[in-house]
Length: 69
Image (tube, rainbow, N blue to C red):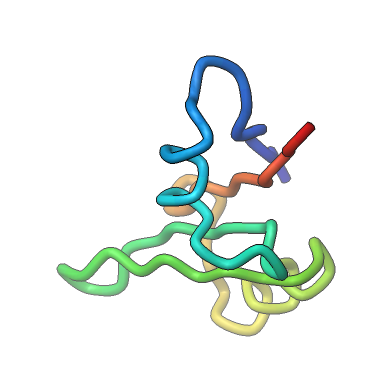
């Protein structure tokens, strides 16, 4: 599974918009029908369980992690 780190040129405001919940640093974006879903998780294990439970394919998902210094 590929994780995209959310750091770099983003400002703190952009990071807060991207990750609105401090307790949920893992984010999963996937399409369900015509709808795009954003899911937030407390740990990578929780995110993996969600991916397995709903049988999401790697090509259909995007994952990221809030890496704040």
